Amino acid sequence: MNSTKAPPSRFSDSILVHLLIIYFVAFFIYSNTFSVPFLFDDEGSIQLNSIVQGLDNFFTNGSGYNFLPNRAFGYLTFALNFQFGGLNVAGYHIVNLAIHIINAFLVYSLIRQTFRTPFFKDSALSQNSGLFAFAVALLFVCHPLQTQAVTYIVQRLTSLTTLLFLATLSLHLKWRLAKENGALLLSRTRLPFYILSLITAVLAMKTKEIAFTLPIVVILYEVTFFGTPGKRLLALLTPLVLTGAIIPLTMMRIHKGAGDILSDVSSATVLDSPLSRWEYLCTQFSVIVTYLRLLLFPVNQNLDYDYPVYHSFMELRPLLSFIFLLSLLGAAIYLYARSVRTLQKATTATKKSEPLPTLEFHHLSRLIAFGILWFFITISVESSVIPITDVIFEHRVYLPSIGFLLALVALVFNATSYLKSRIPAINKAAALLLVIVAVTFSGATYARNRVWRNWQSIWHDTVTKSPEKARPHNILGIGYLYAKQYNAALPEFQAAVKLNPNYMEAWFNLGLIYKNLGQYRESISMYQKALALSKVEATLFAKIHCEIGVNYTLLKEFDSAIEEFKLAVKYDPDFVEYRNNYSYALMEKGLVDAVIEECRTVLGMSPGNQRATEMLMEAERRKRGTANGSPK
Image (cartoon, rainbow, N blue to C red):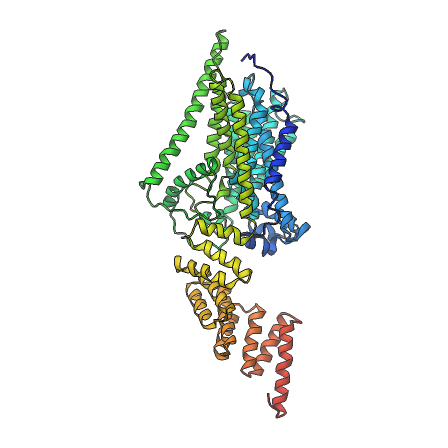
């Protein structure tokens, strides 16, 4: 289409300026996160996880891969962090922020390249491709909803998968665009892009299950911006499509349900979720609308939502949500179909030398449709029919948000294009709107990151927003417990068991609090309730029985203590401290022969164990004293 429009300004097309602004905005709004401690599932996944504490498990033996084979590459990056910085959280946050910035750069690059595809050939929009890409990438990098995927360390799995997802699409696009410049499909200049795109796709499949949608998005991109692929191209796309099989094949090796594999938190903090596939799907209709609301108006963000579960499609909220989502999807299909018809009309007009129809709306409509479809496709893994314990988490919208923001910016460009003849200053108004939104989002992101600064802060915020949910109370209590603020922890654990009387972990934590407060009888009662609720897990039984035994020891009721420690040893015979506690109680009862036997067992298991050595020496001294007729 011929255009007489003025050339773009230096700012609107300056790649370096755009990338520098994105970088500095990202660095500033996340500059207060480098000391954020390990939180929530970080503890079990990184801090206390010996698998990621060094590289040997990934390169010398297979335990690193076998730990979570479906997310092995993501956990390898945690092992690299540990190798170079131990458990210093700053290193983990630097890597997370770098990934987020690279993702924004990839979004920027991908959009600019999209305007070079055949679909946009000779389009007047190409003149503003830099500004368009900048707007999407800037909003992506500064959006407050991204904080959970960036600041919450273990959610690197989400942001890293997004990086590999975008890298695959970008490399694929470079490979395809080379053909438009006359190169053969597998020429020497194009082959590296093709091979690298396959490598990044495989790595994405081994980082997080959301990558399963990558081949679908690649095919959608091909059809949307290049047209229906021919037979030869389909054959070359087959290896990339087949990488999607990696995830289901890997999941078949893991003896867990799909929902457990996709779960974002460890079993230590998960409450039983009896949701059926139908109940989960009905709830997800509402959840997806909540995600869209948060993308538009990111207020009242929450680490652990107390989200209502819906059991029937005919309940008002899921029904209305479904209608809204169906309308949005229908709008995308309508816009896509309309752009196809417009393109056909333009092709016909060109052949007949007739005036060309206006294509700007047609191009923007295709972008809006593509963005909406991207959102729905990429969110489908975690928001469909596979029941996951937690029905909503903000980081799940990190990858889908790219499609949403692409559609939103295209919609704004479309509006300005429509109104420019009526409102001459509309372009300046749109630019001012971008600045205002970006500044607002940046301020909100910086403020949200302040909430993440420590365990008590983030969980106090969560308890305030989810006061009727047991888990936030329990985890806030754990934060106070670690800080030895026992009086502050007590009401949180009490609230947790009141809200959920079957919350075994909270009863156990109450036992710890009462023990530290010197209320040993109450502590024993709490542990016994935890024991009654605990599942058939020997190590957990052993731990609870040991804690009960410690309380009886502190009460100097050694007969009861001996019975509890004996049970702890029975359920976990290889944990030497249980045996040492058992020996101590036996010693207090004067059963020196039993002490000697137990201590020798411990020293056989753990040579040089100081506590066992000291008790053995004392037991032998007492035995000699008894043999000599002297008092014990």
